[in-house]
Structures are given as C-alpha cells and as structure tokens.
Length: 159
Length: 159
Length: 159
Image (cartoon, rainbow over all chains, first blue to last red; front, side, top):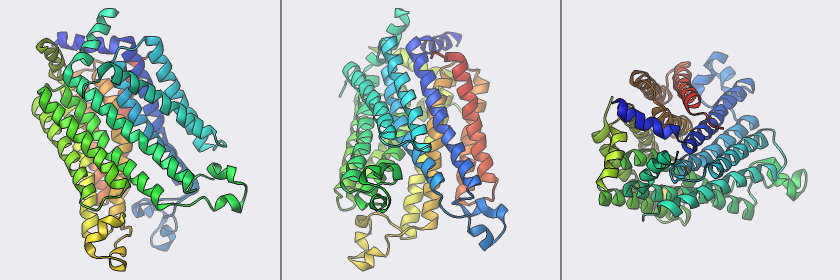
C-alpha cells in the first residue's frame, strides 16, 4: 500500500495545498486559543456558568455568587463565535479553492490576507480597538472568502 | 510540478466532487449571508452588544441605550447558529461521502435536497413561517446528512 | 470517467484516510445528537425560544409562559457549542494530518483518543460529572488536536 500512500503524499507535496494546510492550521490554532483565553478570564474574574465548576469555592451561597456573567468573558466568547462563523467557511471554501488549481502566488495572497485579517480581528475584539477596526478586519476576511468562492464556482460549477 | 497540479485538477474534474464543491460553496455563502443580515438588523434596530460599536451615537447615556437585545437580531443569530450546527456536519460528512464513490445521480439528490432544505429553513426562521415549517426543513437536511454518513461508514469503516 | 473515479476511490481505500473518515463521521454524528437532546429537553421541559414553537399550546398568555430558559436545555446547548468549538478544528486539522502521511497506528491513536475524549466530555457535561471530569476530557481532545497540528506544520509548512 506504499503506492497509495505515495499518491496521498503528492497531495501534501503540492505547494498550493501545502499553503492551504499551513494557513488553515494556523487560523484553527488561533481559534482554539480563544478557549484558553475564555478559561483564563473565567478563572481570574471568577465568573462561571456550570455549578460543578464552582464546587472548589465551597458549598451553597458562597459558591453560587460565582455563577455570573462577566463582560470580559462574554467579549472573548463573542470573538470565539465570530471565529466559528467566519473560519468554517474559510476551511470549506479554501480547501475547494486549493483544489481548483489557482496560481500559487494568488492562493498565497488569499490565505495570508484572510489569516492576517482574522488575527487583527481578534486583537480588535479583545483590546478592544475603536471601530471601524474590528469591522474592517472582519470585512477583509469575508471578502477574501467570497473571492475564493467565486473561483471555486467558476472552476467547478455542477448544479 | 505541473504533473501534480494535473492530478489535483482531476479531483475537481470528477463530477461528484464538482457537485460537492458547488453545493458546499452555495450553502456556505448562504450561511455567510446571515452575518450581513445580523449587521443589517443591528444597525436598523439600533441594537448592539459592544460599547465600541455605539461610539458614533455619542458618549455616555445617549449611546448606552443602544446596548440592548432586539428580537429580530436574536432571531437571525439563532438561525446562524443553527446553520453552523447543521452545515458543519454536511461539510465534513459530505466531503467524505463525495470521496466514497456514490452514483452521481444519488449524490446530486443528497446535495440538492440538503441545500434546498437549509434555504427553506432560513426563510422559515426569518419570516417566520408557522411550525412545522422550520422543524420539517431542519429534519429533511438532518436526514440527508445521516444518509450520507451511513454510506461513508459502509464504504470506509476502519475502527 | 471511471478512471478518475478509481483514483478517488484510492483515497478512501487508504487505511489512514479510512480511519479519519470513520472517526470524523462518528464524532459528527455524536455532535448532531446534541440537536435531538436539545429538542427532547425543550419539549419535555416546555422551554422554547421562538413564539411560533409554542403555538400548539394555545394563544396569548397561556403559550407565552413556555417562552423561557431551562437549566437542562441551556446545559445541552453549552455542550453543543463546545462540540462545535472543538470538533471543527479536529475536522480541518485531522483531514490535513491524515494527508500528511502519518503511521497508521499513530493516526489511529490520535483519532481514537480524540473521539473517546469528546464522548466522555458529553457525558461529563450532561450528567454532570464533578470537575475535573469535564475539564480533563476537554484537555485530552484539545491536546490531541495540537499534536496533529504539529505534525501537519512539520510536514507541510509553506508560509
């Protein structure tokens, strides 16, 4: 079966596909970081949502007061959900785009701008930066995804 | 490296894979539209969640009153989250299904019904249509995904 | 075009890819189950969010009282969102990992631990188990995804 494995390896040897693999992994790791930031704020702000998470603070009323929402926790959670809403389309459309035979330089431009814009979006959300900082970074990543979708449909359309 | 590129292009030349690429891209674009609809309702209803988003309405109390929830905004957001919950499984299972060698006509039937049902679901959620309109459209798309999952496991099962 | 189909089928014939297909499908079906559990609790607890969903309980105030949040419903919804946040990275990074040429036994170890940990996480969330049950199962699946991301970047890095 090493012949088959070789064929699979060819996919990962293709430069456009390698670029997709690299940037998709980076932006997913960035999204995963949001979980750690949420946990950090929940613990430092003592703001939890599950009763079992506050058990170490004692029983009854003394623990119950930590079942509350905190503005910083909610802000990270909104950033995380916004990541899901925008990174899921990038993963799907970006994979199909990488398989649609784009020029390497064009593909790199799309992947780099998308990932860069989403990293800026995260900083803009968490600091927070004044608008339109967050709005613009969101729109840039959104537009890149639309551009890749256009290439996929132009290449592969089969209704 | 044009030889490798040719092999990649063969993937996108396969009709089942092209159909998957087309319908996955369409349903992802539909999901991305939810972001724009949310923004439209946030702006027209003046209902925001981040203080920095209301800065253009002035400072202090005059801006703070726009930090509120609005039923129309919340409705679009629920539709968006429901999209994520259902389109993510379609993306993953649908890709594997497309690679599992289904008949072209069977694959097209699955993809068309899924995407059609999710478009109906969006209208049913946003108008809103009386139940069981939304429930049925949700169940149809859900069942299509289960059917594709069955084919994937039947073809590829390796535990 | 049967020649092309044969090439596609080779992908699904590769054992690492088949293992990915199997475990990705299983964990997506597990995630989809959360929708049914949410619906079950919404109906048995009579706790709905959309006015049109309570129409069968009568009109006006008699139906309005069922527009409320319920702790069990909210718990399932949090588990579902946590699934999205963690299974989306697994789908993307796991696919790239499967294409990066890992040893079959190593790949199986990653996939089995991830899916096992996410199933434990669901039980820990829904029962609920005392902490650190849920936290540990979350951390195990998270670490497996990081390990696969490391292999992808080591094999494919192209910035």
